[in-house]
Structures are given as structure tokens and as C-alpha cells.
Image 1 (cartoon, helix red, strand yellow):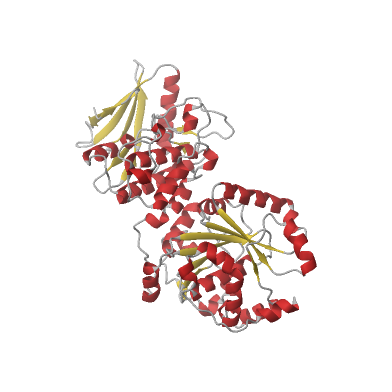
Image 2: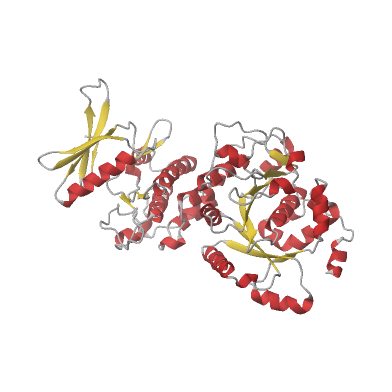
Length: 527
């Protein structure tokens, strides 16, 4: 016997035909409806094809009503065994590494087709660890396939101390239930074996070396109401991305690398887009990137692969991109391709999409991989107006800042789609996200107040008025108008209220802009 629980036992078996082969055989007593549940578990396991999940090779029910699952035998201790062996104190780095692997497994299960699979019983005794610290998730006896619209589960199961509130209350479980159990298990491992339900002390009082990012993420995982938790496994991975040990594999510029190492800026993902089309979101994103460059802060600007291509042409990529150049989004969807050098422009890394359009299927997991490829202290992600795209929503759940560009077009803020987006932004704010509105262009003074009243919130700052002909002329010359000192000064002064929200004060003083009079004084007078 390898282990037993309230409803089953697991045995180690030798294969008589395949000499030396061993299997794990789970025995379950099947009576009436239990037989149906057993078959459902078997059929579910048979469909799974993940290297870190148990592989089912056979199942059967005997005449005396016992059901048997024959699975590959996973050798190694459980996480609970490892925890006890180390006197209930594991290194934080190891716990984070285990969490990342579990999140990958949950992402696979929660996006499984035709219906997501909810595991529902995460606990240290159901997690096995091999000698290379690779995780294997075992025991799917409590798992179920999610059914949209169902108000409650037919069976409420889980383990006291780790189960989510909805499992006790007879409510529907979903992906967020598994994320709660992950938070419960992380709390248990980081607190020396204390359970969340016992109203234990905050983690910072239990163990002082836990990174703040990890503490706050666990806090969001453990919210009683599912809508207040982290919503997906990929969101949790994005929140914890700064804790991963993966190195920056693609950056070779020693000056930028050194600056990044010495920077006191914590990793920030900034999602930027327009409330409606044609409002200048991409222009604003480029402006922010070049201001960060002037401040000597390593950054990257990513163009959301599902939007209309624009960035490559605006930056005159045929002239300035490295040769040969592989678009990062194309590479991620075709891993067999050879990734070339990143497109560096000083402290900025450009990550545009192919001007012929992105041809693959973009998923949230690709976004996470791209963040790791770039690995910059600040990443600006231009989503244009695709706020409703599932991968963009995933990014917004994980973003440190959300920037929404609006302009003075009358009535556009009151369109049905705009109102829906404004409500969505408000929901992000309720979950603790910082949403900033930026106005693009000025209005005559007698209309300014009326326009402000039509907006969901007062803009944090206003982009200066600049003649479109000036921008077009710079693009045709293959130049970035934001790099021209006088323009850069005007943009910096205009966006300072935003910059002060996202950067430490000492970083704002890293680069002294020219104190002379800006061209924008003339432009604004004309406006």
C-alpha cells in the first residue's frame, strides 16, 4: 500500500508481463452512484495528456463492486513528506518554483476542451516531488468538469484547511476555486503549517523574508468572494513573474543590463489602449517608451498581436529593425524558429507584430512567455481598442497600471461600447488595479468643462497638441519625433503627473531635460 484516504487506497503493483514495470493501482469501493463517479474520473483521466499529470493505462470494476484505476507509478516523496522532513520550513524559492509548476498544470486543466476541469483538492499530500523538484499532481477523485450556468456542484468535496468557501457553501466551483486552494497551500507552506481558516496571523508576521509580491498575491488568492480573487492561473503567474529565477536570455547590451540590475524599480506591466479607435494610444505608448529611455530606465513596448499592425511601420522597421529580424510573437507561436536579436533602441526594446498581420493563435500563455523573453523593469503593452479580447483581459487582471486614452470627440464616451468599457475599468479598480485616463489634445476653454463632465474620471494629464503633419513628416524620414529634444521636453512635462505615479521620485530626476522654452508653447497658443 502506497497510501489511503477516506474513500480509496493506492497500491504498488508489479507487471507480470512487462518485467520490471510497476504501476500505481487505486482501489475504490463503488456502490450505486459511486460507480458513475468512478467511471467519470477514469474517463476524465484518460483524456489528459500532460507530463505532470497521472497517465491512466486501464480501469475496471470487479464483481464485488470495487473499481480499480491503473496508472503510471510516480516515484518520490509528496510535498507533505518533504515539508515534514525539513521541519516544516522550505526555502521560499522552492515554494515559488512549485507554485509556478502547479499554475502551469491548472492552466492546462482550466483551458481543457470541450470543458474545463476543476481539480478542487489541492494539498501538499496530493503533490509529488521528484529528485529534480519536478511536480506531479495526483489523485483526481474530487475533480469535476465545469458546467457553465450550473448554480452548484452535485458533490461538495475538498480538504478542510485548504478548501475554498464555495465548497463549504454548496455553490458552483470553477477555476477560481483551485486558485483559492493554491493560496491556502502556499499560506500553509510559508507559515510553518498553519491553516488559513484558523484566522492565523498575516504572513509577514510569520516569516519576514517573504517577498511583498508573493504576500499580496496570496492575499488576492484567498478572498472569500471568487470575483475578488485572481481570476486565472496565468494572472497569478504574471503577478509573480518578478520572482522567477529565469535570466534575461536575449539582452546583450552591457550598459542597459547593468542599469537594469541597479534599478530600484520593481517590475511593472502597464497596459495602454484607447477608449475608442483613433485616439492615439500607440503614439502615447511610444512617447512613454522614449521618455523612459531618456530617464535611462530599461523598457519594452509590445504590440498586442491580435490588433491591426501599426508599430513596425511607425518605427520604420525596414530601415531600423535588426537584420535578420524575427518578430517575437511569430517566434513564440513557432518555437522551432530561430529567435534573432531583439530590436533595441537605447533603453527601449521594440516588440511589434508582423506588418502583414499575426497569423497564429495568440493565447495568454504566449503573453507570459513574451514577458519573460523581454524581462524589462517596465513593459508597456499596447492593446489599441481590444479590451474585450480574452488575452487582454488576462493582462489587465495582472497589470500594475492601466492607461486609457480619450480625446475630445463629442459623444464618443457615451457610446454603448465605451460605457461597457468604462464599467469594466471600474471593475478593475474595485480589484485594486490603478486605472489612469489621459486626454489627447486640448479643447477651447469654454468647452473644456463640458467635456470633462462627459468623462468617467478627470484625466490625470493631457497630451500636448501637436500638428499631425509634423508626426507624419518625421515618420517618412524614418525618425521618432519623440526623440527630438524639444518635443521630448514637452511630452515629459505634460506626462509628469502619470510618471510620478509609476516611477520613484529619484528616477524622475535621473535625466535633466533642457530648460529652454518648448515648441509646445507655440502649438498650445495656436490651439
